[in-house]
Image (cartoon, rainbow, N blue to C red):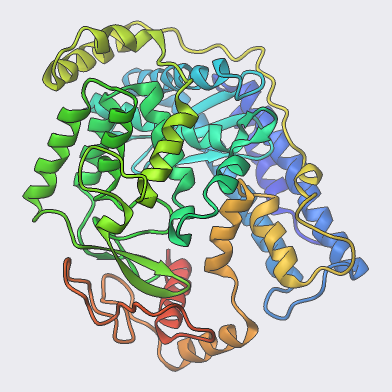
Length: 492
Ligand SMILES: [Zn+2]
């Protein structure tokens, strides 16, 4: 088989450009590691299909697999390139990028001091309109976007702390066990829709323990702009009172922060809680239900089934159980010295906001960019990620897709489970979808989702919500969401 390794060609073209910048040598190393990792992934599939060890799939032929590998590698190359172009930015912007890297290093230091991370990991930052992070399995490095909003509002630097939480989650180990595994085991008994919140809840707890109370304020501002009702790509609803299958629903998330602060004995917990109450009241008060998509069905769950609408914890409530665990887990982390003074000198939240803004203003004019000369980036190889994922014998497509979508590229088994529920379709379902798309292309854009689904009215029980457990077989609502997702991805 002669497969086109476009990632290799792209990497070769960009290398001279990348090598010239301030992180040139280290980014070139990351590029090299990415290349090695992608090669190994490529070979594993190429050999597997040639030898018959990987069962052929009509839906996912080798061409699909190799295109996917190219795409995933190119996504990482794009991140590397975005970091590189910051070198050519005007000094005011470059300084923001370097300050963010300095900030990120300080936050990461807390995890290193706790012994959770080996060696000295690298943080690379770049500008974006979105908040995101990429922690690659093949290098101890993390590429984090800085929201443009940070140019005008220093609160938004604090998003970096949460994003670094993802890096710590993916690469961190406590007593030799991966943090992702620890969390995966810890929440087995919680309701299924909550298990997928664990990573994000960990990142929130991490961010709070290393950045202090200001991160709670930044967070409220972020959640405040979350829309009430907005159809998402899979035809469900993201927003205030909906579960997006990843985060604690927006309306509850700042509540969760305030509860964690109270549990840590943070002096600002009450003010932070009251601040959020005011915002919630301004938007009509607490919703009655959280909408959650479970096994393709949308179900509504009373908010008070998850948690109490107060600062205290009730250990009968599953969200409170998760929060208590997260606080214990992150309790030993320390706040970097650099922002201890402004926290300690503030009595009220208003003082704190002022002191924080002054701190950032001062720090922006005088900070030392981190020096990564001795950083050791080596981490797992592709093969090291395989054990536990594959058995001997012929692997069926559902098994090797798991390797493609998760083992090699994404961060953890847990993450892969999440993807799998989105991706794993039976051949019969796939055929129905194809037939349906051919018969009636779904509308694009901000249309209400197809097939009788209505936008939810908060506090009411809309007709699409089913209290019944998901049934076996193809549910029309699920089909509609899958089609919407497939179409959205094609046009994204
Ligand atoms: Zn996150």
